[in-house]
Image (cartoon, rainbow, N blue to C red; front, side, top):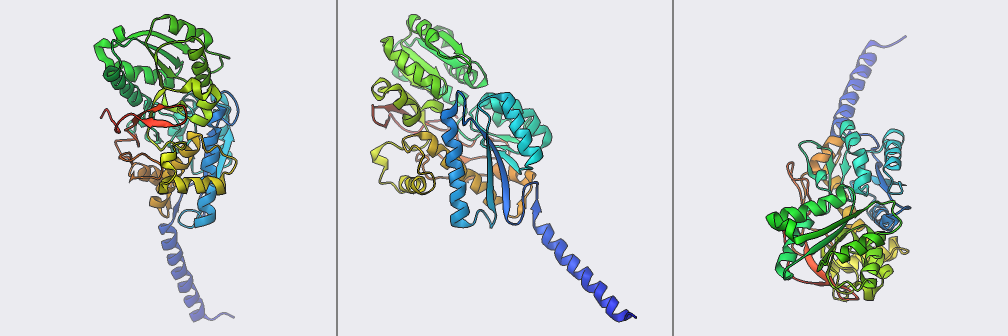
Length: 405
């Protein structure tokens, strides 16, 4: 026999509890891969293949997430589960791995996937599925197109911006410049060439005297280097990834080519490029940088460097502290952490993109005067760089931070 009053009270209590629960649920809005305890983030990285030198980026980012999980309990009480898969810098493999991350692992977002051809292979898929393709590790200009691809955002300076800055350097520092270009035959390489040509304007055809491309599957770029040297150019613009950059430096010296050597930032690494090519061979190379040179003793006493160095010692002891790529992974990891902090308990895919497009921060290891800044109409977080020269041991500043904007 039941008691009507007790049942009425019970139903009222259950209803009240339901209201509390629904209110609490409303305060916490979750997308796939999110619980009260964790956030799943997916990534692809070339841990093997022709661009394997970049694998240190993924490893250093994983180490950074390990650090904040252990020291801070994650972000806003949720630990980051970083699932990073090898794609070998192969677009078909990238497609396969991304589908696994999205459809099987059910990650909240894809973060810092590396490579222009590999990200191009998933660009439409990510936007059709409305899944953040966030802070991709490539500077192709197309990652900053919120009108047509609102779910994709870059991080580093765009290749076209860098091409323009190299153009400014050439006109200011080289008498009667004649430029020869080696570039990867994809959007990555073509973006650099386009940026340089756009800056040079109607002078481009007379200044650029030779262009040679290569495929990522090519074993060497020796034949291209010989043709470029024979053009009579007094400026060599190297637009290659680390493996080919080291080859280009060696061949440049072997040919006794007397030219200004300009090296794109994606291969501006002492540990991963200049050491394999030979430090003496690499002396005098001009590059553009936007974060601290990890090999410059002048930086060793700075608070930023010491924090990074301690992080490396504790969380990535096998990492190369002479490689710029470990600093890159550390920096972009901090950027992702900030987005998650701003998102709070609203961890939907929509809100992740909203917060990524609302950044204004300075980070450890970025050069003074350079910050991360985005808006709903500006998906280019970093838009300034500083010219530098490798002196055989470290990168030496050649001036102030510059921008073409």
